[in-house]
Length: 510
Ligand SMILES: [Fe+2]
Image (tube, rainbow, N blue to C red; front, side, top):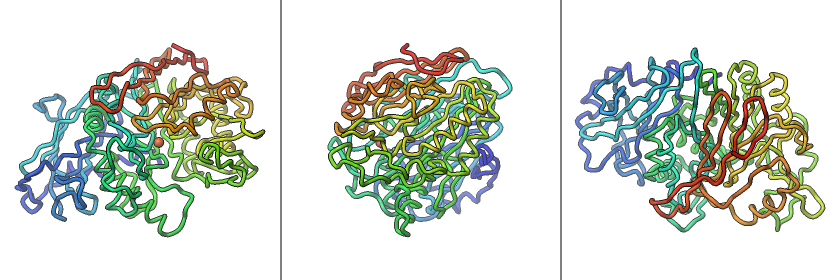
């Protein structure tokens, strides 16, 4: 199923419900702002957008400081910032079952334009958010500007890089995972609880804490977001005990409750649908993969690991890794992405993967080590994906990735076993918003760049995001980095810029 199909008649109950207003506390008075977690929008199409907020006057206590009953929340969407020209309005119901989150999918909008929106409950009004629809699918599109971001450990610093993303003024933001962290690791500021979340309420409190960051809130209120999970957002798939499955289900529900998703999740479900595709006219098709939820166990070849090397997540790839049929996408998603490739008429075809797609070999102790979370541990799946790119003659493949808290610009070799084979595409892996990259993980990568001539840039020293400017003739990526994450006055600069020319796979310094 395409993500866009979910929008049609999805969760957008706002526009059509005529609510008995008083019954849902329309006259509610709030001593504290119930909109402290901000507003956001997501899943843009050329004619629709999903709006989100969550009522929580006391966001860091269980229940968010609300009575456990439904609240009626009015919303308005307008074509001007002062909201003087509303194009749609309605009432949505925030229920305690979904943490008093609100989601509204507004249809029938104009392509390629900004809209502004706001929520009201009782005597409280949210900030005004801005969002943007995708360009007209029938017209040719001259330019798209968007950002990729990832890995924002709350305890390690401010999410101040987002302030500069707001200044860069993008069409939308793609978040590639580690939106929250379960593990506590950092001293700059603290999780309200040190323990890894387990229950639904634990995960709600963790999401709420992250959403209190003003820089993140500003970005959400400025652009539509799409987000996929990485390993820290929910429990890994390795553990399949009933307790682990329940914990993962709790993580998925809290994720859904805090993201501007139109649908893709049903309360109590043990899976969530976050992969999807955005088409920017004839210029760009962006396929967003979920590389974590459906993957076969990455925890193989343990006996071959060196306890003193890369925290044992860098290991030789033993025979189990190359088993035919082994997958990081799952069969359904693999068929879906092949179809997105086959039906593309767009000039640029970006594939978002939370983890590194290109091969990376690390020579250690006479053996070749690989990073077990990356596609290097799913080589057969990668071969099938590259095969699909080739068979469909996919125009200008670009992979957008994250996870390893460093900036990379890479030529994706057509044959991953031969790093010097001709590139089939290009990969831009973005550094983290705030999470650091410890020396035991950094050093093996840095020390092995000479064995990986397809990697043109690697630098783990700075935090930030990537800014992508796409035109019919070229794709330019600026590695935007901040000079500190400990001050709201951080300054931004380019660590490097790389470009891809239309019709020529591979990255070039720009
Ligand atoms: Fe991370």
